[in-house]
Image (cartoon, rainbow, N blue to C red; front, side, top):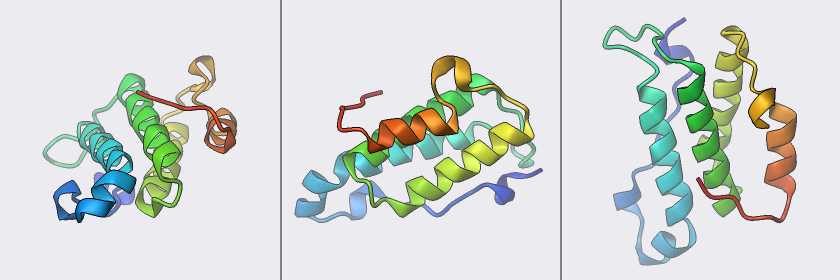
Length: 115
């Protein structure tokens, strides 16, 4: 398992115009925080060195990102890959309500989410 199996493309917050800063900025900023935490899951040789707490942080940032802008395809893709990584590592995310089913319900709900 290596980082390249799970990595996704990224959007740089600085590349947005003024209108996009308002409408999509929070989503992309949360996505960038998720990518930063995702990068901490790997060492310099791209070997996995992460833990369940860091994966939970990535999921929370991605949920925040998708709650602000549900069409952020890169965030959706990374969320899918994080769940694949969690399954590959046999992590149990149900105790914190971060399992796939709970996250899907949260994303489809109208309640706000902040992390």
